[in-house]
Image (cartoon, rainbow, N blue to C red):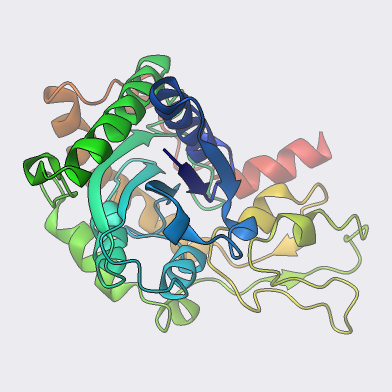
Length: 301
């Protein structure tokens, strides 16, 4: 049986999840390929019996580059896929969003899974509510999920359609479902901070270019190109050693306490269901010390 997992990961949380799912599939089938999203364009997915697709949750849905990947797929009628995601305080309907887009390609999404992960955003404090995640026990469960997907894929191909378990909107708050729709590709440029490269601080290391998942940065251009295009991952600003990528974060910082109040409701509900464990005291979060301030302090230390 042939299987491949396609993953988009930046800080490593989704990759950890993918590796453990792969381990589970390989335990059943002897092997399973693991391919980064940016290298998956030439794959003929019709040749595979089972395909996994995973990414972090961005604004309650899959990142725009993952959307583009799905939209570029050919028709794959009857093929078995599964979806997975890592996320911070609230997953949102990312799994449902991916499953719906894949269904338009004729794919049968037979299962899904997710893990909480540490989150790094310039306008939020760090540590955050999910710092310390993913937990090893959650990754162990991902390995078991991989085994289940391999077994179920064979059974489903043999007619056991009752084993098909696509993701649902259970436990997803209404506000997250609305954000999935409202925070569209057209709206995001209007509400997110615009970046600028401070050329007096930039040391031309190229790290921001290398880490941009959509090739949206060119520091050699005159003027330097940035956010063209952009999926609002903020990886460039988070990683710049000189804090040379600048933005007005004040609006997003002001929104943080309100957003975190919603996140806390979701996390406490997940804790009550036995699905989440706080590794950080929620009362210790310092909204007066967002990550971009921490970065400047670290640079100047």
